[in-house]
Amino acid sequence: MMQLRTLIFTSVLLPWILSSAAKDEYMEVRKPTVKASFVNKPVEEMHNIFELGRSFYEELSFLQKDTVNFPDYDTLRDSDTDPAAAPRADEMPTCLLCVCLSGSVYCEEVSPEMSAIPALPKETAHLYARFNKITKIRNKDFAEMATLKTIDLTGNLIAEIDDGAFSKLSDLEELILAENRLTKLPMLPAKLVSFNANFNHLKTQGVKATAFKKLTRLAYLYLGNNELTAVPQLPESLHAVHLHNNNIATVTDETFCKGNNSHYIRTNMNELRLDGNPVVLSKHPNSFICLQSLPIGWYK
Figure 1 (tube, rainbow, N blue to C red):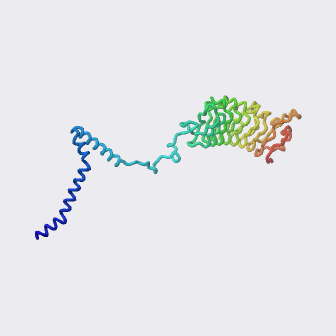
Figure 2: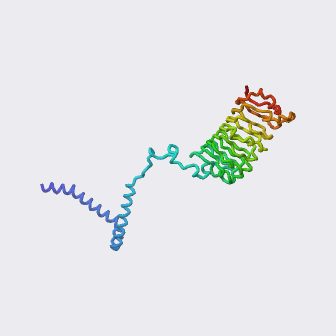
Figure 3: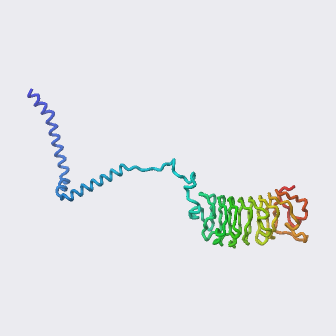
């Protein structure tokens, strides 16, 4: 029996003991330098090293436990769905909100909605601010913009224009106010070549009889689809006049011609539209005698 125990010890336990001893010796061989460096350190410095290590470990643990908080897209305020979350147009630089290119400013269908004329660069010559939500043109909007030659505000909600809003625009040649809500017109710049106020709510009492008479360079006048009951005085410079779809019921020999001068010819005007009005042209045979061509369109 004793011999059996000896055999078991020799064949099983002895190799295990030898293997463990060899492992300890191998670990001691790999770490002598580290041990020596720590043994030679003063106690206070050793304490600092361990504290630094502990702080680094705690910070690392904190970073590992920290989580990234992603926004809740179900409640995120989006400028497309929540207008209050978006910056207002008048709070943004004009050339960030619009496109500014070689003296032209394009502010068409701006988002967020533009409800007033933006501050323009001083060198602006052409402004295109179509299809926005502008409701009023104020005196100060163009007060410092003497360089403007074109203003296009088609498709806004303009119902009011201060009377002096365009008074300082000495070089303005084209003014387009079509598709707005105007019931009257302000004083217009003297050098206008083209004026378009189609599709508004202009009434005769809101348009002075002499509103266009002194505009000696005006060549194109578009006042179609309004509520006019009379034709304003027209300058000799006009080439085209559109007054279709108003409430004009009568014209006289003085409306387009000079009734007391049968030799008078209006040489510039080659396009006149009066269709869509209640006027009966056959009742006014001498009203168009000075024109080189009769009004175009369908009439009763």
